[in-house]
Image 1 (cartoon, rainbow, N blue to C red):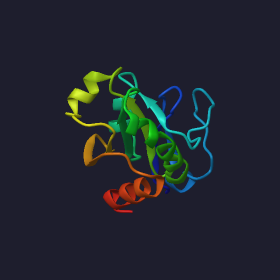
Image 2 (cartoon, rainbow, N blue to C red):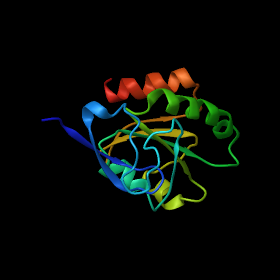
Image 3 (cartoon, rainbow, N blue to C red):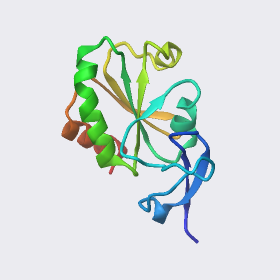
Image 4 (cartoon, one colour):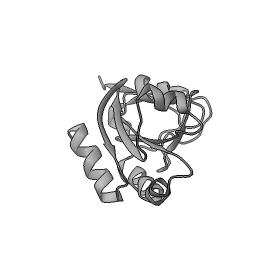
Amino acid sequence: MTDSMLIPCPNCSAINRIPADRLHDHGMCGRCKKALFDGHPVELGMANFDMHAARSDLPLVVDFWAPWCGPCRSMAPAFSSAAAILEPEFRLGKLNTEEENQIAARYAIRSIPTLALFHRGRELARQSGAMGTDEIVRWVRHHAGR
Protein backbone atom coordinates (compact mmCIF):
# COMPACT_ATOMS: atom_id res chain seq x y z
CA MET A 1 0.00 0.00 0.00
CA THR A 2 1.28 3.44 -0.93
CA ASP A 3 1.51 6.13 1.74
CA SER A 4 -0.50 9.22 0.94
CA MET A 5 0.10 12.87 1.72
CA LEU A 6 -2.36 15.62 2.56
CA ILE A 7 -1.71 18.62 0.31
CA PRO A 8 -3.74 21.86 0.53
CA CYS A 9 -4.58 23.44 -2.82
CA PRO A 10 -2.77 26.77 -3.29
CA ASN A 11 -5.89 28.19 -4.98
CA CYS A 12 -8.92 27.03 -2.96
CA SER A 13 -7.19 25.51 0.14
CA ALA A 14 -9.07 22.21 -0.23
CA ILE A 15 -7.14 19.28 1.23
CA ASN A 16 -6.11 16.73 -1.40
CA ARG A 17 -4.88 13.22 -0.61
CA ILE A 18 -1.99 12.39 -2.97
CA PRO A 19 -0.07 9.09 -3.05
CA ALA A 20 3.48 9.94 -1.91
CA ASP A 21 5.00 8.20 -4.93
CA ARG A 22 2.89 10.40 -7.26
CA LEU A 23 3.89 13.76 -5.81
CA HIS A 24 5.84 14.64 -8.98
CA ASP A 25 2.95 13.74 -11.35
CA HIS A 26 1.55 17.29 -11.72
CA GLY A 27 -1.55 16.64 -9.60
CA MET A 28 -4.71 18.69 -9.85
CA CYS A 29 -7.01 19.79 -7.02
CA GLY A 30 -10.07 17.58 -6.65
CA ARG A 31 -12.26 20.62 -5.92
CA CYS A 32 -11.14 23.50 -8.19
CA LYS A 33 -9.23 21.39 -10.78
CA LYS A 34 -6.21 23.74 -10.74
CA ALA A 35 -2.60 22.56 -10.43
CA LEU A 36 -1.43 21.71 -6.91
CA PHE A 37 2.06 22.95 -7.85
CA ASP A 38 2.87 25.72 -10.28
CA GLY A 39 6.39 26.71 -9.25
CA HIS A 40 5.26 29.94 -7.55
CA PRO A 41 4.89 30.91 -3.89
CA VAL A 42 1.40 30.86 -2.40
CA GLU A 43 0.00 34.10 -1.00
CA LEU A 44 -0.68 33.38 2.66
CA GLY A 45 -3.14 35.06 5.00
CA MET A 46 -5.56 34.35 7.84
CA ALA A 47 -7.77 32.25 5.58
CA ASN A 48 -5.09 29.76 4.51
CA PHE A 49 -1.98 30.06 6.71
CA ASP A 50 -2.85 27.35 9.23
CA MET A 51 -4.05 25.05 6.46
CA HIS A 52 -0.60 25.14 4.83
CA ALA A 53 1.48 25.38 8.02
CA ALA A 54 -0.28 22.80 10.19
CA ARG A 55 -2.52 20.52 8.11
CA SER A 56 -0.23 19.85 5.16
CA ASP A 57 2.22 16.98 5.03
CA LEU A 58 4.57 19.24 3.05
CA PRO A 59 7.05 21.45 4.87
CA LEU A 60 6.13 25.12 4.41
CA VAL A 61 8.72 27.86 3.87
CA VAL A 62 7.28 31.30 4.65
CA ASP A 63 8.75 34.59 3.51
CA PHE A 64 7.54 37.19 6.03
CA TRP A 65 7.84 40.48 4.13
CA ALA A 66 6.38 43.98 3.70
CA PRO A 67 5.91 46.10 0.56
CA TRP A 68 7.95 49.03 1.92
CA CYS A 69 10.99 46.81 2.67
CA GLY A 70 13.76 47.15 0.08
CA PRO A 71 15.57 43.89 0.98
CA CYS A 72 12.18 42.10 0.84
CA ARG A 73 11.55 43.38 -2.67
CA SER A 74 15.07 42.48 -3.78
CA MET A 75 14.72 38.92 -2.40
CA ALA A 76 11.30 38.31 -4.02
CA PRO A 77 12.64 37.01 -7.37
CA ALA A 78 15.06 34.66 -5.58
CA PHE A 79 12.24 33.31 -3.42
CA SER A 80 10.10 32.71 -6.52
CA SER A 81 13.00 30.91 -8.21
CA ALA A 82 13.49 28.78 -5.10
CA ALA A 83 9.80 27.79 -5.26
CA ALA A 84 10.31 26.46 -8.78
CA ILE A 85 13.28 24.40 -7.58
CA LEU A 86 11.87 23.12 -4.28
CA GLU A 87 8.33 22.18 -5.33
CA PRO A 88 6.76 19.65 -4.90
CA GLU A 89 8.82 18.51 -1.89
CA PHE A 90 8.14 21.85 -0.18
CA ARG A 91 5.45 24.54 -0.36
CA LEU A 92 6.72 28.12 -0.40
CA GLY A 93 4.49 30.97 0.68
CA LYS A 94 4.66 34.72 1.16
CA LEU A 95 3.02 36.52 4.06
CA ASN A 96 2.67 40.31 3.92
CA THR A 97 3.27 41.37 7.54
CA GLU A 98 1.53 44.72 6.97
CA GLU A 99 -1.73 43.03 5.95
CA GLU A 100 -1.42 39.98 8.23
CA ASN A 101 0.07 41.51 11.37
CA GLN A 102 -1.74 39.02 13.67
CA ILE A 103 0.15 36.10 12.15
CA ALA A 104 3.42 38.06 12.22
CA ALA A 105 2.80 38.83 15.91
CA ARG A 106 1.93 35.17 16.65
CA TYR A 107 5.41 34.19 15.43
CA ALA A 108 7.16 37.25 16.92
CA ILE A 109 8.48 38.47 13.57
CA ARG A 110 10.70 41.42 14.45
CA SER A 111 12.82 41.73 11.32
CA ILE A 112 11.99 41.38 7.65
CA PRO A 113 12.58 39.63 5.43
CA THR A 114 12.43 36.56 7.64
CA LEU A 115 12.18 33.01 6.35
CA ALA A 116 10.60 30.38 8.59
CA LEU A 117 10.33 26.66 7.94
CA PHE A 118 7.24 24.90 9.33
CA HIS A 119 6.23 21.26 9.29
CA ARG A 120 2.94 19.97 10.68
CA GLY A 121 2.41 23.11 12.73
CA ARG A 122 5.86 23.29 14.27
CA GLU A 123 8.48 25.89 13.40
CA LEU A 124 11.73 24.10 12.54
CA ALA A 125 14.01 27.01 11.62
CA ARG A 126 14.12 30.76 11.08
CA GLN A 127 16.50 33.07 9.23
CA SER A 128 16.35 36.86 8.93
CA GLY A 129 17.86 38.84 6.08
CA ALA A 130 17.74 38.67 2.30
CA MET A 131 19.17 35.62 0.56
CA GLY A 132 19.74 34.54 -3.02
CA THR A 133 18.10 31.54 -4.67
CA ASP A 134 20.93 29.09 -3.99
CA GLU A 135 21.16 30.20 -0.34
CA ILE A 136 17.42 29.75 0.15
CA VAL A 137 17.46 26.27 -1.40
CA ARG A 138 20.47 25.19 0.70
CA TRP A 139 18.95 26.65 3.89
CA VAL A 140 15.62 24.89 3.35
CA ARG A 141 17.15 21.51 2.51
CA HIS A 142 19.61 21.70 5.41
CA HIS A 143 16.98 22.52 8.02
CA ALA A 144 14.51 20.00 6.62
CA GLY A 145 17.20 17.32 6.66
CA ARG A 146 17.02 16.65 2.92
